[in-house]
Image (cartoon, rainbow, N blue to C red):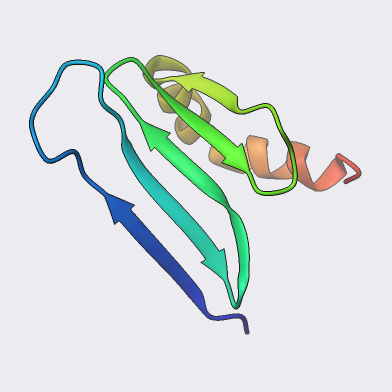
Length: 78
């Protein structure tokens, strides 16, 4: 099983449009980073250039239906 590590960066001051960043690693490979802001979450994959954005409301819907979402993800080719 791979070893997972995370690095969390918090802003040093409570500023208005500053994100908290979580870098996620699996063994020595960086999977990507999650940027958390007041309005949304942005996923920046280590393998892709464009970040994926999801609003807090859409994240709540996704997590409320996580089983259905995981089944849909299992059907998507990489």
